[in-house]
Length: 227
Image (cartoon, rainbow, N blue to C red):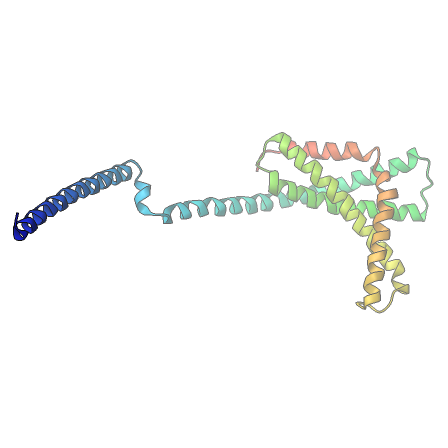
């Protein structure tokens, strides 16, 4: 076969191959388009892109914040009413411990009772507000656990802080100039001493009568309707 004839035959074969390839690619494209159309028909949200899911995820967060603030606002009045009652109950528990241990109630012990009364009052308000804000919409058992935990931490924390303030006021006359480096160390050591004395001696004054007060207060909180 001559060279021109061979070239013509080769071109004819190449054209047939290209035509077949184009046909296969066209079939693939049609199949892909059909599948995409079916997926969009089943799930219209897929055609809108990632913007709608992001908006849908942000809306519940704002709703949670609004509900949390609403629970905190509704808990202010009950917390204010509960605080003095809890402070009085803690005071009674401390006095009961002194009587049970046959301790004389002098001026020093009276000052300790006052610190527990103030600490219990502040703790009652803070614990009720915190538990209502965090667990006000939970089940009764969860509200009971939240209030028990909040009251335990708040009672110990605020009373220890008041002990620290009393120590700081007493030892301030021997401290260096305020906000100096030595003054900072003196305040830190005073605070550490106050916390140690409170943990070793002060917490025992809440036993055994403080535990029934704690659990009864948590039970009262759990009986309240969900906020």
